[in-house]
Amino acid sequence: MSFPLDRRDFLKTSCAAASAALVVQAGSIQAAAAAPARLKKAVKLSMVQGNMSLVEKFKMLKELGFDGIDVDQRVEHDDVRRAREESGLIVHGVVDYDHWKLPLSHPDAKVRAKGLETLQASLRDSKAYGGTTVLLVVGIVNKEISYSDAYKRTQEEIRKALPLAEELGIKIAFENVWNMFLLSPLEFARYIDEFDSPWVGAYFDIGNVVNYGWPEQWIRALGKRILKVDVKEYSRKLRDEKGPGAGFNVELGEGDCDWPAVLAALDEIGYRGWGTAEVRGGGRDRLEEISMRMDRILAPK
Image (cartoon, rainbow, N blue to C red; front, side, top):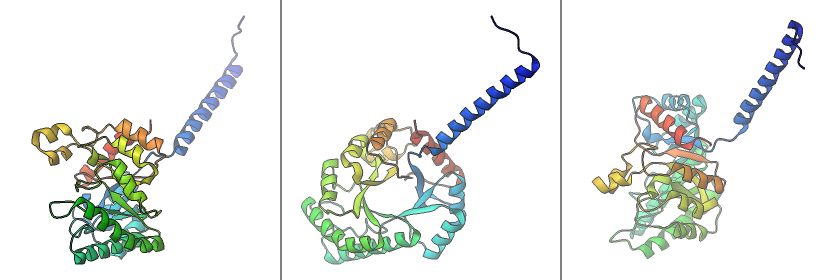
């Protein structure tokens, strides 16, 4: 048998229930806040367009929800430091400035020497900005540069930079690109392992693989060698209709990259680092759209 509550008992019961609900809600909020984000969100500096100072660009990115930036243009050290300090945006790395123009696989030793100088300068810049890596396209293979020569030359030149990388505490992260070199994840892993150095690893570009493979398979093969990832999309349909390069003309989340599978693979290897967009940039509206699209495809499940 149940009995009706008087006003005093009713208020006590209601307050107790409300308090319990608030505790549960607070606990849920705390748990959500405590859960680490899957990836820290960044963009390449060259994507941020418009007639603004570096400080203004950094502040805008922070307002749009980005955590950091990868510097892929030559800029003054003082300007970068000021922008970083005034915005709170993290400069997490530098992209080697001349790795396409001065490839470490080039047959001319003088060209390789200049490429090595740029790599070393990029390492110093990353250190000055508070970064942790330099993204490097290790070399290229073409009609004049054989695969075997590229393999030997690039490893020789990169080894020359390792003492400086260790001294500065900056890692050299090799990017998988369309350079006709290191064409499988197993070979890419072996190439890294042959250095026998903690100062090299992979800067894995997700979208660059979709044309000829599946990113989740590469992620599992590379495993802990992955230092950072680039977030990019690719459409096989556009590739088939208009050519290989056209495949990149698709928005994040609308191509053939299986993002749930990619995230599952990143979870399997324990990756919780930077995810840097490398897509068509623009002004504030465009960057805001990129931020929202990244949130959608990278959101924790």
